[in-house]
Image (cartoon, rainbow, N blue to C red; front, side, top):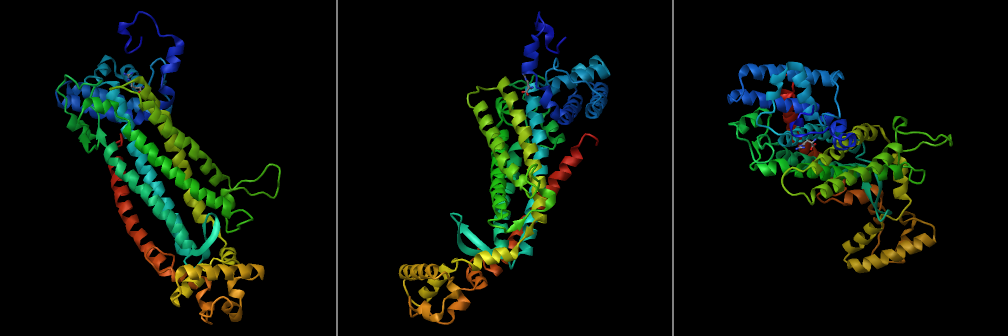
Length: 476
Ligand code: ARG
């Protein structure tokens, strides 16, 4: 007999059981469901809604059930539909009819909203930890490459030389925004829906604030209808994840390009590459390629969730069961990518000489020649034209700017003097960008210090939240 079977005269059609059950995927919520139930049953006794004796029996039983589920000893069935009813059924099997008191003053609607928040809270902490590791890997490559010059690109055409440290730091700050978004989302996730019941609240004299407190929530959701209908926190997480994945995808694209023979700027460690079944010489950057590829599914989950929600009236609708697989898959996909990225970045070989060669064998110091002429009082627009002609001449002569003799330079402007060779040297070109946020070495060192401060504040948040979750874990 179903937990809700009383009103029915016929068994459920098998296909309906199969179609509506969520147990195949929501069993991921088991530990969180038990955590929520323990707090709920404790509150029921505290508020004299059930006896302390019953509460203790139920709590003990719940812990046994949790253990059996995690050991794989418990049988989770489709007939019991979802993780909530499976656990309740297992509890009743364990402790007898008294287990049926657990669901007093509660509905699966507030229960599932609670479980999703508890699950996500956990995921947010793990993701910030992984983001932090990735930021540190990028940071470490930056500190190791404070003197490594490579072409910076616009339109994927060599534009102006930059330090490789500067390039790595661009990603550090990009992932910092992701970190801040995740941290900020915590305050919207960490609110308790428990006590909303099915939709309207409950007639029992429960204490919503007490359970919320027991579960480490910052506050209770103000409105019971909103509490059971809201999946904005899922959408928000998926959006944050989509952006993180997009950032990883952009970095992936650079790694793929840089490790091609055409660029030859880096070599990914063998441990992070794979071979070809047919071409013995191949070493493929499969990891960044696959991370780039998986962006599609994460962005897809965001679109899917928004679409699921868009036509839903208040309050709970079964459609909302569709919130789970996309969110679980996003968490797993993101964890997988981030866990690989940090060691892959850390272990990659940076081919400094090839990067330097690409700077020297190019015209990416042309802006500096123009800026030099501006320094000699020539209007920038005029200087731009003069240098354009100089570059054209050099291309025709199969020379780079630094190969031109002073006499050749002076064909284009008499203002050019012998000091031009120092001005156009790669390091000088880089160090000339001595503006806050620029690529000059001292400015890049400044950015490292700024990153240090951000890391310290990230770390303070992460350790505080990790400690909170540890303290709340079921074992305690
Ligand atoms: N498995 C359901 C879900 O994930 C739990 C809530 C079901 N509530 C209900 N009234 N049928 O959404």
